[in-house]
Structure formats: C-alpha cells, structure tokens
Image (cartoon, rainbow, N blue to C red; front, side, top):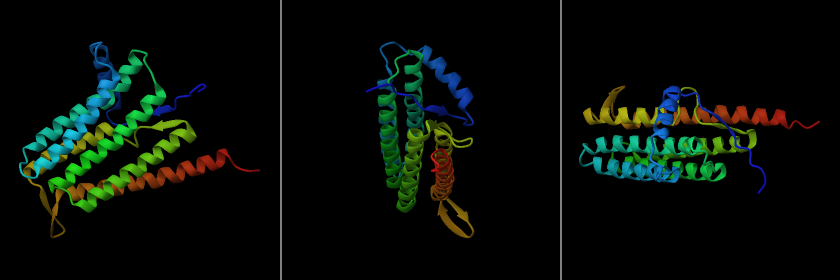
Length: 222
C-alpha cells in the first residue's frame, strides 16, 4: 500500500507530562502476554460497563463509584495501548488509529447513553453533547488527514482531564444531584453538560475556521 506517514501528535494538556511518565513506567512493567489489543479491548469494555453503571445509579447512587472505577480502567486501556506498542516497537499506525478512534466513538455512545438512562442528565442535553463530541472528532480526523497533525488536546484539556472532571462530577452528584441556579432547581449534570456543549461547539468553530484558512493558504489558486 506504499509508505504511510504517521501524523504528528500534538498533546499539551494539563496532565500530559506526568501522564507520559506514568504510561512509560507502566509499559515497562506490563507482562509480555498482555498486548496493545488487550488494552484497547479493556478501554472499550470499561466504557460499556461505565454506561451500565450510570444506568443502575439512577436507582442506587452508589453505582457512581463503579463509574469512576470504569473511567480509570478506560484511561488505562485507552492511554496505555499506544504507549505499549511504541515501547515494544510493535507499531501498526493505520490499524491503531482506526481501531482506537472507533472505540472512542462507541465508548462515548455507551457512556452518554447510560448517563441519559440514569436520570442525572436530561435526554436533550445528552443528545446535544454526543453530537458536539462526535462533530469535534470528525474535525480532528479530517485535520489529521489534510494537515498531518493529530491534535489530541485543545488548550489544557484532553481525554484525561475530561475523565477527571467527570469523576469529580460523579462525586458531587453523590452529595446532591440538583442545584439551585438563578432561582431554578436544575440537575447538576445538565448544567455541566450545557457548559460542555458550549465548550465543544466553540472549540469546533474556532478549529474549523483556523483549519479552513490554513488549507486555503496552502492551496491558494494563482
């Protein structure tokens, strides 16, 4: 199929330096019988279980602790699989890129579906948040193909930071799932979800405009 030029990875998130060191430490100590594909599968199963735990948390909030455990396992599988492949020099860049990001898409679907079933976030907010997330990722993948740069984080936020915020949100919901804002009684996760939609949509708009201008200048017609 010819030479394949892997896109440059761009990660400048808040925890990226510490996370990289931790992942390299884990990769060096991962048993040989465990491979990157096992970790990818762990990440997907963990997100499916997180969604199921969210659904169960509607009747028993203690299941939110299980969600947080699954978020950790998802981080472990999703973050360590690529690091382990690079550490062992067992890279399959086409396969890895495709599978990892299909797993991410299904993982987001499982997680948000479970959150919607829990009753802690309204269905409209869940749907809009999933759409915004997937649209941003479409933008990221198109930019990876056309510009050769794979943007893993925007500003100080990447996947790890989002998992941490979600875990903290789960702990807050355990104390009180509803808050009073501007004289209205609202679901805490609805407020957080709306903020997430605004953030994702703003990032998508800015990134789309920036990428379009850059590509236009690269292929300006005489």
